[in-house]
Amino acid sequence: MPEWAIHIKWAQRLGIPEEISSSVNFLSDFPEKTQEFMEFCEREGVEIIMRLLRVHDFSAIMKIPKYLQVVFVRQKGCEYVKAWYLHYLLDYIKMAPELSIEEIIKKTEDRFESCEELETVGNFVMDNAEEILQDCRV
Image 1: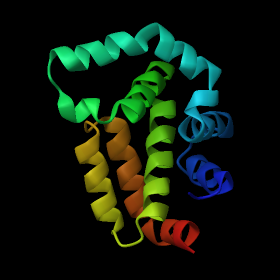
Image 2: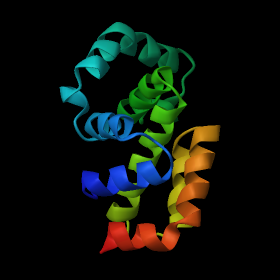
Image 3: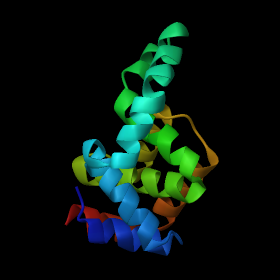
Image 4: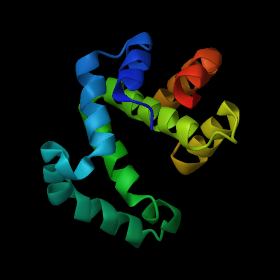
């Protein structure tokens, strides 16, 4: 994964405050150590999972850990959602050097429901692809 300094740099360039980016970085990399997220999971996680089971959404069930994070950050606001998707995309770019940025964004859209925040982040990543590749894959 890229260093947090890379995540923070790109979040700031997207207009996301460092406080939000740092919070999301910690959540993404250490969800089990994020007190507020763990309390959210204890309070609402079972109901969210049961809802997925009732509608037999097995593709979503397979994504439960990340799905819970998206639901959690959505409650905190769109800047958190954008920071979360940016973190996810930058990690994916680093982990899958054989894939183009376009492929990574498409796979992310397929894995998660398309939303305005993901579209904004995807466009931002595409617009800055050359420099992001330099930061994430060197």
